[in-house]
Image (spheres, rainbow, N blue to C red):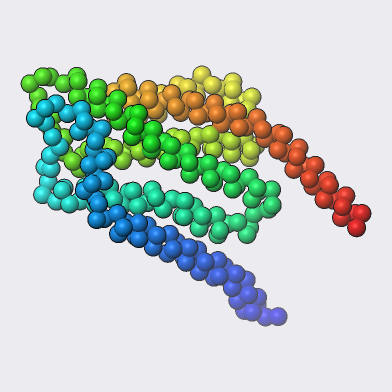
Length: 262
């Protein structure tokens, strides 16, 4: 067989994988676009819902304002796109899973599916926590400490950027249990090692809260404490790693014994 033929055969699977990846990416983009088009008709109503935590706390006579000409159009548009991406996350992750699943072993698939599902719910949980718990407390603090003679009138685009930043920060933060579990499962660290470093990790949580959230103690604490608790949850999940490894070894031994018997 010539070298050119061998190169052609070796490139064929790569090309097929790239085509599959392209198709799955296009499907994900299409679903995001469909969600966006479906939500576009109620873009202004969605903005009102997202701005409710601040509008409910504004003093009488205050309101949100638009300081740029295009803000009344662009701000709801940006929010609608963000919500469309948020809604399509399960489908996008499914496409990623369908692409990599054929290359995984049986025990890896068994682990990946619950992690994938739990990561989706944790991200949504972080966004919901930010909306219902963090935003009312943060805005309650901001609107109460200002001088009485100053009228609070926040720009709608600046408000949206602030809120989306918090949504993303808390959504990613709620993935800490998954990240902790995977680090322990991969052998990068151990439960005992992480337990010894707990004081430094708690300090790191508050430092991250200070860097990610606005410069007030409430939002920093509201991010740091869940980060620490979620880290503890990841440690609890990590304690099951040895038990799972023993079960996998038992299953492999049984399969080997069955094969030898046959």
